[in-house]
View 1 (cartoon, rainbow, N blue to C red):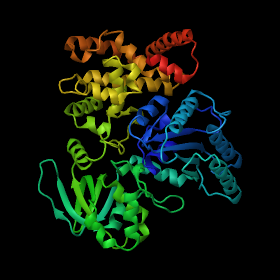
View 2: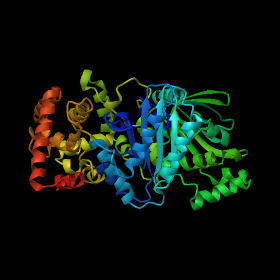
View 3: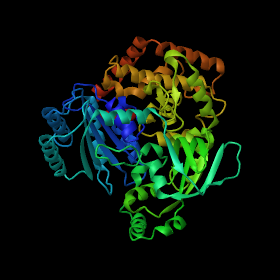
View 4: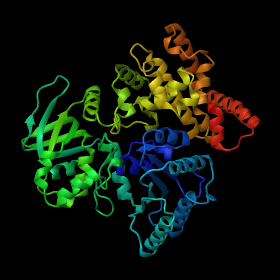
Amino acid sequence: MSIFSLENGFLGENIDPFRAHLKGDEFGIDGVAISIQGTLCTDVDEAEDILSVGKNHTSEFRFYQSKTSDKLDYGDISRFLDAVYDFFTSQELTTGTQLESLVEVKDKIYEVTAKTSPSLRCFYCTTGSGQVSTVIQKLIDTNKDRLSELNIFEEIQIECMGAKIIQNGFRSATNSSSAKINFPKAITMPTHEKVDEAYIGYVPASEILEISLGDPDQDGVRHINRSLFYDNVRGFNPDSEINKKIISELESGDNASFVFKNNGITVVSKSIDRKGDTFTIEDYQIVNGCQTTNILAHIRENAEGISVPLRLIGCSDIDFVSSIIIGTNRQNEVKEDQFWAMRPFMKDLEEYCAFQSGDSRIFIERRDNQYRDISIERTRIFKPSDLMKAAAAMFFHQPHRAARDHRGIRSEFSERIFTEGHNVELYHVAALALYKFDFLVRTAKTDRSRVIYRFYALYALFRMHWSTPDILDAAPKSQKKVRDAVIAVLNDNEAFSIQIEEVAGHLEKIISEAGITTREKIRELLKS
């Protein structure tokens, strides 16, 4: 719960907390979230896939320890920070397949040269106030100095989080965003069949800050709410030449020029309630204007007199919202999930999966935080990119590329996946198989060491019933036969667990015969 509340609420991320949560017998640490370009990476395959595109990637290490005690325990905090230090140094305390995989991710990040080093955040969570005593503050400062001496971090934060912050984070993570904005110069935009209402004009910078900053932290400071942004908030660099020039102009007092030189901000809201000049917006996203908002937050003390161009669009049609995002971000790389969300088939699949009952129900998230205010099991939510990996392994017989090369798969199979006329039932089976595998690992019915074989197990599950990579083009009768056979295994946890073990046993026999021991070489062997 601490990881969920802080990641998805306090930090504004959108992750499955179970992927960051550790098994439970690790020394001093309850959870680790390694983020590269805003994406959670739990193994080196995911890291390599992200790091292979572009350069100067931003990354962050976030460590968690949670205690039900309402007091801060010096010994527990000391063990927590010792474990964090050990993770980046000797790894004498680092045990278990999860942490070993995360160490590989860490090594891969430092292997790839970037302009800025990763940042480090350590969260010690308690049910009390989180108030830090002088003795514990000295312990924190000593450990910050020790970590700083490694010279591998851009920034280090060690924070003790009390119940109030965790509760506020939980509320933020489970409730849709809502805000009021004073928009006195609003001009009604032309009508559109898919837009409920829309306005254009300009507002004071203070209004933009009011809707883009989250709740105050324990020090009373409000930070950018990442969950509101389509764009990559982590990409903001106040030291870039362009941003330095803009900031310099504003700090010199040239606030009046900003509205003429800036492209402004586009906000899309599921609903707008207007009363005079006050607009109440619900479930909103800032789809364009990430850099603008960050600059305003950076110079917030000098924001008086700055006006910002604003487009406020009320629209609940996910497909049209996606087209707005793509249209207003043509200069930026469009997120992969946004790429798939535009396809009519994906909407059909979303509706079909959500319509299923009981244990077969799956939710396809075509828009970030689409289900944040709906009470459902978070592990049943899958992004289109997650589903593409499962589909690549099962339908196209590409388990060796599913985790490490899904951009290559998108390029190669973009015209053969998620297309109109495809059988939604087959894709639902792929999503269900991915969910069931993770469920068996999470509940310890399947050993966590089997995660490295995830996509091979999914491939084998389908391959037993269909021998060629063309099931999507097969006759409906054949597709139904395969689907029913696979569903029968997935509905029997013991049967699926046995099959996973059979796959793992077969692969481990090959690995053993090759005499390979390191996880990286094992992955390379499997891939080849």
